[in-house]
Length: 359
Image (cartoon, rainbow, N blue to C red):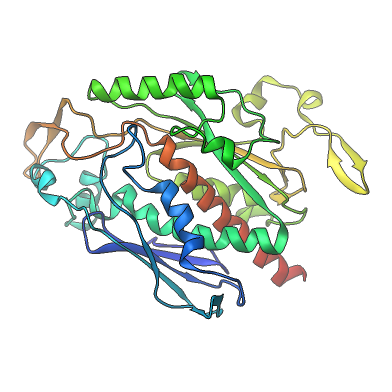
């Protein structure tokens, strides 16, 4: 059913937008990892709605509960069950959607596939499902940091036509979180916030790009052929709600370069192999080369807009529908911790796979 991600570090998310709660089951986490609910809560606080004027006003504290898999503050190596209760569900706001399909949402496709759907906020297709991903990603992130020194930092690189200037090798989480839009370029962030507030007042939405840099990944992680590290990162990012594009390293810009311009020359620095450029984005042949892993994810404008649009209903009759409920005018600020979480899940899985095969 497509609800489980990973091979050795496996995550199954569960729950619907307006049900009793959402969460995840993490299986394969190594034992003896120090873990408390506070480790997970700090990540969920960055994802939760209602944290600023430019995101959804839904009031969810998103307090996580660890139901299993730990004892005396350490992981046991057994499945870790994480639960976050829904406390501010308002399904009545979606009653019209019980019969009408929202344009560019998953309403019609879920109905076509299953013959039934939870129309309350989109049910399983809602971005609220990502609570479980972020909770699980917090565990993977801590294990990566403590066992390998891996650092993952994502930020909003672009909103609509506004682009920030950020040094991916030096940017910190503190700089990212300094503004509610999570762009470390303060002038660009100011303009982004103004734009998001403007389109929200007009009942519209905008999209943009989240960029991510991973520092400290050793050479050798990843697999050739089908399970390439960049392929798993691409799958992880394109599984996110509203994501529409993925590029790593030079990405689509490589078509404007020659091989001589694009190749990353090798050198020795402080006894280790490095490259003088990083057009490969830290991965070659599907395997990490020890350089920072850099990629970008494009997110579409939020599909729910407060304007009447053409659609059809469950009886296949043409009609119209105007958006209602509480929605983000731009997903980018809350997408940053979700991108980081999925990155951590991919890397933790590949780190364990590398250790299992190569020792």
